[in-house]
Structures are given as structure tokens and as C-alpha cells.
Length: 178
Length: 195
Ligand SMILES: [Zn+2]
Image 1 (cartoon, each protein chain N blue to C red):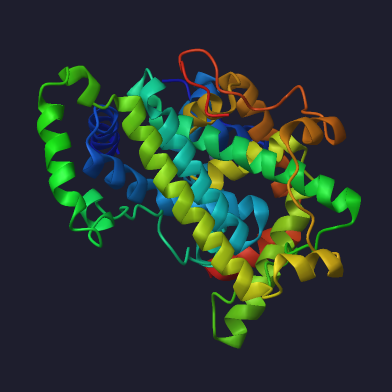
Image 2 (cartoon, rainbow over the protein chains, first blue to last red; image 1 turned 180 degrees about the vertical axis):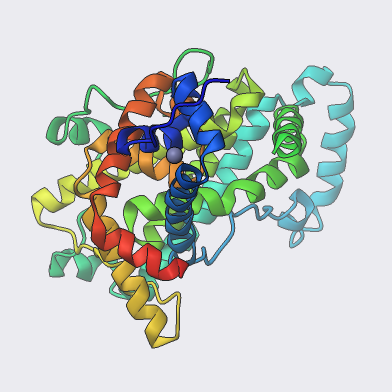
């Protein structure tokens, strides 16, 4: 096996960290046989590992997990109206003879409902947090000039047009996450 | 890693077919990673928390349309990067109108992750040096570098997440690393931590 005797230069060292397979065979053979070049590469990689580690420990942990709370069940909602229960029971009996297709929920609907529940929870949490930070009601915030309302997509695109390089899912992903 | 990838693929398939437990497991598996990805790009804990919630809701909504379950991770990161980009665009409008109080700060001060004063100083210094360094990078160099060394994505995953080819990703990464090597302040700080 031919082994290059010259040590890796700065460019080759960086390329070895990006992807060692992109180096020429001679340079790769040298790297695998030379403790000095291996040491340099490992030192470089350790610096980058430390960077990732420090970023992780110096970032705060999330205070809450993603919200999944369930809404109260149907009978819990009507719990205050016991007289309605026979009516509901009758409706359920008639429901049995309805075509089953009317009663099944598609996957998309299930996901949409889950998203809706989570969105409601999120809005509630946002309102609570906004209150923690600024307890002024909307009316007074309007007066104090701190409340700036909602901008729709059209307005956003008008003031800050989307760059052409915008990241957009395409190709094999049928559904756009935008 | 292969096992984890397999596990993720299986969870994705189960979640798509309506298994709520798999969906929740999937979310909890990536929750902290996505939160940090957003935090590194917003420098605000509150914004990162809100955006993370939105990203996972978007994920759940779009999941039935995901064709290749093996590509779930870069697909999820793509949703996250899109959402962060929208956030910055809207924020730039508020800044332009002069109606926002900027909660972002260059040193990530106020995040209170460490009670020890020496750690706090170190934390502040780290983010200061890090943002000074990323300030020398182009937008793509910064994105690729951060995805590779802070978010720990592989080259192929980055290429998939950014919809760029692998050689373009490597070119940006090479340029970013070259600038990293020419940044003695940040490297000294990291070497000090290593020794
Ligand atoms: Zn050598």
C-alpha cells in the first residue's frame, strides 16, 4: 500500500472532518497510518463535540412538554342536565341504524381534532403566559400602545416578501408542512 | 443508531395509522431536540417553547402525507426550520414598525439555566463567542454548521432537511469550518473546557 509521506495540510484536515471519504486514496491511507495527523483530526473533532455539548448545557430546558390534554367527555359535559339523558339514549339507539360510514372518523379528521385540541390548549397557555408578563387587559394595552394585533399572511408577504431560497418541503413528501 | 432509526420508523407508521400512544412517543422522543433547535435560532426560551408546540401540531397535521417514513427526522427538522423562518419574518415586521420589545439577547442572558455565578459567566461568554463566530458565516454556512454540530444531523439528513444536494451541504460546511479554524477566541474557550 502506497502511503503519502507528507502530512495533511489545513484544507485536507478540514475535508477529513466534513467527510473522510472525500479525500483521495493517498491522503486517506496516510491519515489512517499517521498518529500525528490522526491526533490533529481528533483534537479538531473534540472541539466541535465540546461546542455541541456546551450549547446543549447552556440552553434552558423546556418548561413544558407538548400539550395533549383531553377535552371533557360528552356525558361529563351534559352532567348538569340529567333530563337530557333519555333523549341522548334515544338518539344513540337511532344512531345504530344509521350507516356505519357516518359514524366512523377518518384519519385526517382524527388528526385535525387532535390538532384543534392542542391549539386550544396552546392558546390558553399563551394567554396565561401573556398575563404573567403583562397583566393589563387588551383595552388598556390598546391605550398604552403595546398591543399590536395580528398580521395576516398577505400583509406579511407584502412587507417582508418570502425569499426565493425559502425552505419548502417538496418531492417525495406529498403534504407540505407550511 | 440503526435501532433508533428503526424504532422511529415503526413509531411513525403506527402513528400514521392512528395509534395515539406511538404519536405521543414520537413527540416525546424529538421534543427536546426540536426545542433546542428552535432555541439556538431564536435565543428566547418562551419563543422556543411556543414554536416547538406549533411545530409538533404541524407535524401531526402533516404526518398522514409523509410517504417515506425513514425520512421522518429531516422532514420534522424541515418543518421546524420553516416555522423559525416565518417567526423571524414576522418579527422583522414588528421591528420595522417599532412595536416590539425585543426579548432576544445576544448572550442568552435571562435564561437562568445556571445558578452558579461562574457558570453564568461562562454561559454568557460562550453564547457571545458563538454568535460572534456565526456572525462571520453566510446564512447557509450558519445553518449547515448549526445543523451538523449543534443539532447533530448527518450530511444526508441536512441535505434532506434543506432540500440541497450533499455536495452543496459539504461545501457550506467546509467554508464554515475554515472560518471556525480562524476563530481563536471561540476555539480557546472550547480548548479551555477540554483541558
Ligand atoms: Zn501525518
